[in-house]
Image 1 (cartoon, rainbow, N blue to C red):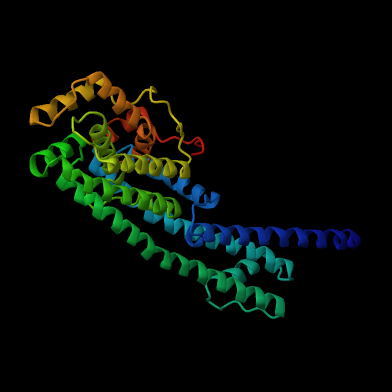
Image 2: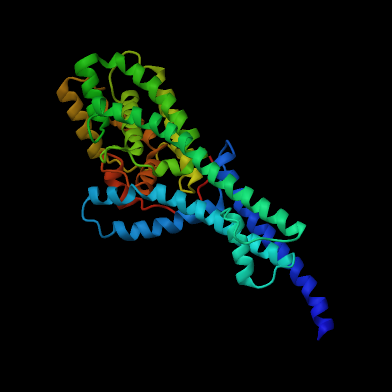
Length: 369
């Protein structure tokens, strides 16, 4: 029996050492991918934490009777998920070091739990004696402090990006109403400033789309931070501007449409596609101009009639206008509605007003852009 124990115990210790290193490694690697790596990187640990937390929030929102109730529930989703992610990393480090302490001679799971917890939280009430366990205790304390420090330093970066995003979203209410509407935006510019002044809108929003593409893929939780005003949303704002640019290019009878509008459209749909890819939403990255879209021809005709009644110049060939508009819209139609459903955006024309009905939050992996 002693011979068997002498043979099995070293194998178990090697196995425990490997398991412990893996627990610590994956916890630290997840933190690096989430907080340190300055590029898009999917992390399975963070994804799983956010998905599990989302299930609890989905259960609560099903009982909400109004959008305002759902908004109050979902405003806590991203902050709570971030805290749970930090807790998951700390638990991973705790468990990993429990295996390592056992490997180096500390016996009894209660004892290794006490030593590991004391080192992790830098409490110091459980002492270690030999050199190796002392080194382990110091390294565990350093890792835990680094993880907490990373989260604290991560928040200012996230809120800086959030402020940039929301400043532009809030400014859209003056130009496109609340909820934002592409038709309302074009009408207001025509009546107040003239269609030529839309050029500055395309320039500003092109830069905004480039900014959110970078920030919402490198700082994934930022997508779920809700606007200070319940009726505002970065998704519906993006949809209103893209629809306005699509109508501007396809339908308005103006001598020389600004090329900036097309650049804004391209920046916009590429940005939404990249964010959708990050969240593994299912979409066709290279749709055909004739593919169906969620906006109907009847809805488009109503929009054209409303613009014409205000005096906005509309092209005579409505059939060609519809084909051109649909050819632009097809590039961002699915991703716009999917992101609106994913983030539970407030209702807005041609985006979230149909997203939850037609496009529930997808879970399948997207095609590559």
